[in-house]
Image 1 (tube, rainbow, N blue to C red):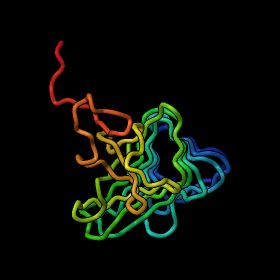
Image 2: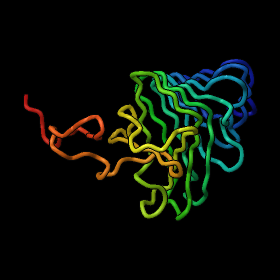
Image 3: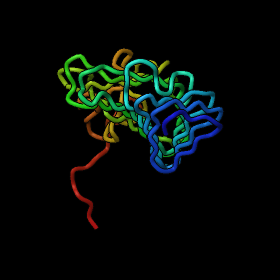
Image 4: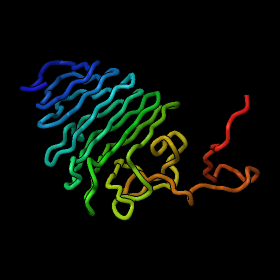
Length: 220
């Protein structure tokens, strides 16, 4: 999609790459498809970006103007919102979007550096408030227990208005494999082993964070 896109609603059901400005009066609806924003690709206008039915919006990070911007909200219902960093991993980049409303299904919000990350290089995504409906889940991908060296994980995911907490709740996971917490500076962080309660199940209670798993096999 080049040369400028105008009109009401843009619906994506396959894979489309936006390399210019989409100035729309209505929503962008990604229904089971993939919308990639790269080059000069950006979305403006009053509507919502809706990502549903296992759809995906993929933002290739750039310096300068945001591709979606803080004034435009995101609606996820079984969708993915991803930002990919500079392919060489040599330049810090950031993206800001508006409020993220998670209405249902299993969803993913991810930040991925584009290469071997040089020391001090960070790829960051800042969202507006994160609002989740009952039953919906969010997996934060690309994050680690810390950002930057020595973990060499140059990803940062910040949520506007999110208070620091040592447990964001059972509906939120890191890469689908464990719980997450929130730090005012580093944003969403994956749990480390030390964050989990490992005592006997008779000691479990509402104040202890327990991840239930098994390394064994199920009998049939």
